[in-house]
Image 1 (cartoon, each protein chain N blue to C red):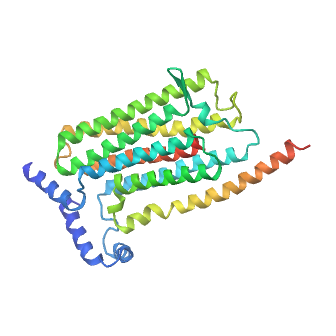
Image 2 (image 1 turned 180 degrees about the vertical axis):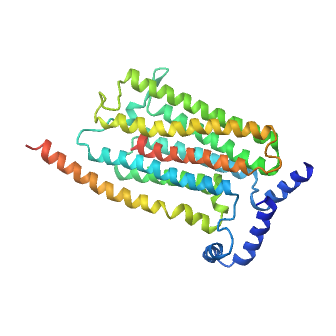
Image 3 (image 1 turned 135 degrees about the vertical axis):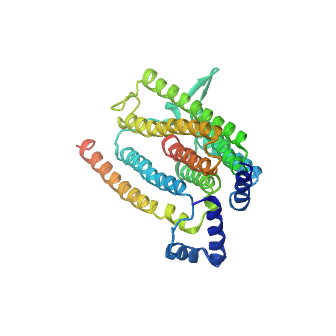
Length: 233
Length: 115
């Protein structure tokens, strides 16, 4: 469906369904047409993200289960992830910086989507590349963190000197899978930014930017949960 | 080309257009919330207070990202249901697994640490 057709449908639906949002659900599903009024790529991205939510939830649940069931003390994340900068011992500092970087990248992505819908191609491409760059720096910091944990602290998936053996397996699995998502996101953003710059979406419309944005915000969203459950618990 | 651009603009103006300042405000709010959740660890709050603060900041951040950055606040009810109903299964699974983990923990203590 073309953009303007979507818009017409949208307006028609709004007229019929302005009564209540529950009524709009009934109307959407009983109408003799597609239930979700959006470009198919966007709906597919939402469904992919929903399934990804389940994958990350299962990782975090298994982590909860091993942490709750171990009789040996869990290593204190506040100490494990502390860094000494210029003589000061600061707990969790690298993780805090990584969190701020990822949030900043989400902000630049949100603005890229906004400029895309305004039809401002140049700003969209620059903001998407800025987002990819911030994502790449996040991966760099994660690589630094992993190296420090493996080489200096001697943490392995099967054991570590600080406490419960399950710590390493849970940590490498969860942050590794998240890091893989960030890496894929950086590649995705770069490819789409390049294609936009080449003008490949001038005819189709810029919905692709919003779809890429959904993926990127989801990566940030997962980090919010990892930060709360893995680093702050 | 020119015609296409105006068409995109019209579509955008009606359904997807928000002022940049809104994104900047949400961005700032996310920064403040992240700083707050970092402070929970920095000041070493413990017990129920720690968990309450961690979960409140986490859900506020997640809510802002989903609703504003991912534009879900402006989607139709059917889309919200599509995304929020299935994760109820996850909540049930978490409840089941935490009771299971508790049981394993008690058994480990009794079998291995209390001969």
